Length: 117
Image (cartoon, rainbow, N blue to C red; front, side, top):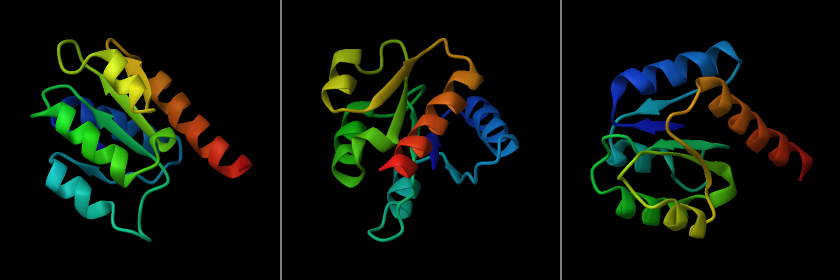
């Protein structure tokens, strides 16, 4: 599951994840992402890109209630939410500027940790 308001970066991240063998549902609104987070149908991992996101603190707060934080990778954007707040919620975080390969590596680690448990 990939949620990002900025379509160019969302499309690039999604394309690379698919190239690396992941199935990816990409959405551009919080309403659409929440629909995907139904009990019994939650994705194994979620990526949240804070770039250009409306009310990112509220989205992070809601997401922390809907998904296990260790399964969520947050791509931090300058001026969106302080890093300390993201880390306090227990999410994995990478900060912009970020290389797409680093995002893929983090997602791979989420899947590996899921498989090991």
